[in-house]
Structures are given as C-alpha cells and as structure tokens.
Image (cartoon, rainbow, N blue to C red; front, top):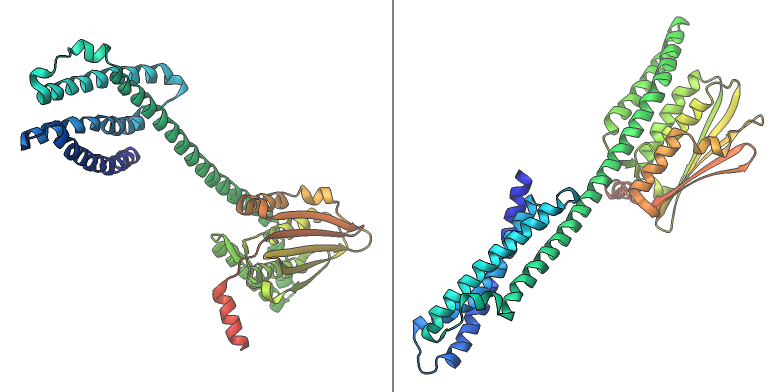
Length: 376
C-alpha cells in the first residue's frame, strides 16, 4: 500500500512541471494569436476565452496523470489481458466523449453564433478527433513499456540481492557443517592435554580456539577484510589443526608489502584450506605444506594458495574443484566481481596443487596511510 502511494505521488510530481510548462506555452500562444483573431477588440474576456481554448490540450496531460496512477493498480498481465484491454477501451471512449464535449462548449463560448458544427459532426466527422484516440493509445503503450522496464530492473535487483543472500547462506552452511568436527577434535585434544598434565599447552590451545571463534563470530558480518587479517585467521586455524592432525602440516607465506592492506572478501582462503584438511581427515601420517603468496599485478590482486604433498600423495584437480568451499568461493567471486575475476586450479606436477585467485585490487587507505606514516 505504501509503495503504491509513493508511486502515485511520484507520478503527480512528474505531471505538475509538465502542466506548468504547458500553461506558459498556452499563455504565450494566446497572446500572439489574440492580436491576430481579435483585431481592434482588445478586452480581457476575449483573451480569457482564447486562453481557455488553448488549455483544452491539458486533456492529454490529465489523461497521462490518470494513466500513470491507474497503471499502478491495473497492470498488464497475461491472466488479465482481456480485462486490461476492455478497461482501456472503456476509458478511451469516456475520455474521448468528455474531451469533445468540452471542446464544443469552449468553441461555442468563443465563437458564439458563428459556430455551426453539431456534436455528431464533431465526434464522427472530424479528422482532429482521431488525435485523441492516437494520443491515448501512444500514452498507454509508452507507459506500459516504461513500467515493464521498471519492473524488469526491480526484478534484476531483487535477484542480485537474493543471489548474494544465497551465497552468504551457503558459506554459513558450509562453515556450520565443517566446524563441528574441527571443534570436537580440538576440544578432545584440550581434554587429552589436561589429562596428561600439559596445562600450558592446553591453555595456549584454548586461547587460540577462543581467538578463532571470536573472529568467526564478530567478523562474519563483514563483507570484506584486509588480506593480512584473513591470513592471520588462517594461521590461527592451522596452529590449532597442527595439534590434532595425524601428520605434519607446514605453512609459509610471501605477502608483497603493497598487498598487505588489500581488501578481500571475507573467508576466501581459510574455508578452502579447511575443506582440504577435511578431505584428508581419513588419511594417516601425511606431510604437506600450505604456501600463500600475494602480489599486485595491473591493478589486480593475485593470491596463490599452493599445497605441496610429500610421499607421493596428492589430491586430484577434480577433487579440489568439487569441494563445497571451492564452489562457494568461486560463486562469491563471480557474484561480487563478475568477469573481472578468475579462479583457477592447476596441478603443476604430481604432488603440488596451485589455486590462483585474481580480482580487482582495493586498498584500505586508512591503514595504508598509517603504515606509511610509521615507516617514515
């Protein structure tokens, strides 16, 4: 209801300036025509009559305002096509007869005895009367096309918003699915360390878990964070995983200085690493290393996530591409950056998997300025 009222008010705001412009044109045209039609009879009554005859063309603007407001309630739909056609035919007939009646009255008032045309001739034997019909049809077609375009644009915006909400929900669902195993395993490790009187190790692990969960809760509402924060979150996660993983996990990073403060979509690296570890949870005595590298290339931020396995073990490219986290991250990047991004998975040799992420570089200028000031 509120939306319809806003549309009606907006339509009247559009019509009022048009009516004012037409009034000025009618007054100017009446003044010019007045001296030609009433030579020597300069009086206010004749001028008023002539102006009224010019203002008859307000009809088209009144019809436009009426159609704009009716279009809010009566829209063209397949199910109501016959009703829509019948309604506009009826409205056209009524507006046509009313307009011609007003025209005859104004002409009789203006020309008095010299006006001899009958009402029948004005309606059915007057080529000018077709202007009303053609104008009405053009107005209806134009308004319908504009309204269809507006509805299409609104639907596109709603679809984009729904896609964004869906991607966020998919990411959240993915995290809630993987986190339970991670949490249970971590809590079991803490319990085991306490049982072995390793209170310091248990306290450190509990502190790291607290930081990890705090970041998950408080940062998940953001759309983007700095790259350095994303990597700190990843480092905390891997530090926790190392305590319970049956094998050796290495981690190195090479972050270009100009990319440290780059803004990235939140949780685009850690979920992928977590999914890889989840895929390897059934394996024993594995040794592998995660290596993260970042750089700025041609106004784009490039992030490389390299997983290097030892002992001849490796996950296939197809396995990596079918991980839920990889699919969600790819969809998020496509939704945010469209064609300006890329996500590639490559196997350079038998035991190395490279994941390359590329999207437009965007810097957190406040932190960047602070770092530059500290360096000086």
